[in-house]
Image (cartoon, rainbow, N blue to C red; front, side):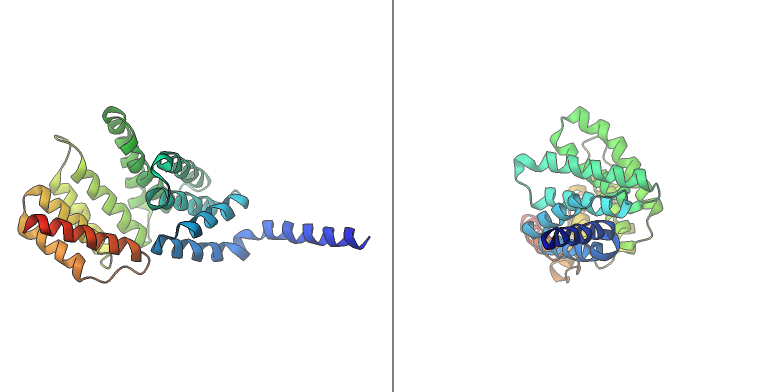
Length: 244
C-alpha cells in the first residue's frame, strides 16, 4: 500500500511538472540556453534540447527556444555529417512556433537564418530557390521584432545575404545599408563590424575594411555571445594580415 501511495505521489509530481513546465522550469532552461550559446557549451546545449523535447507543449515560446537551440547546436556543436539534419530540425520547430503565433518575430528570424545555413548543403539552383523563403522569413522578422538583439541579428543576416550572393545577384550598397541599420539597433555586437569589414574587402574599399576589423579587435564581447567574439577576433586578425 505504501509503495502504491509513493508511486502515486511520484506520478502526480511528474504530471504537475509537465503542466507547469512553462511557468516553473522554462526560465531555468532559458538561462542554461543562454550560457550554452554564449560559451558554446555542447553538453549543456544538448541537455537544453533534451529537456525541451521531453516537455513539448503547444506553446510558441517552447518551440522557439527549441528551434534556436537546434540552430545553435548545428552551427558549432554538431559534427559535419549531422549539420544538415540538425538545421532541418531547427526549421521544423521554428515553423511550428510560427504556426502557434504568427507574430513571433524571433521564430521568423530563426527560420530565415536556418534556411540560410541549409542552403549551403544544396546545389546552386536549389539554394537560389531557397533565397525567396529566406527573404520572406527575415523580412517578416525585421517588421515584427521589438527586441533589439534579434532585430539586429535579422538585419545582419539580410546584409550578409546581399554581400555573399554570386554575381550578378549581390548588391554591396544594400548590404552596407542593412549592416549599418543592424549597428544602429545593436551597437554592442562587434560581429557586425566584422561583417562590414568583409563587405568592404570584397568591395575593394581597403581602408574602410581595416577600420572595421580593428574595431572588432578593440571591442568588448557582447555579453550573450562571448565565444562568438573570440572567433570573430581570430577571423578579423586573419583578414587584416591579408590586407596589410
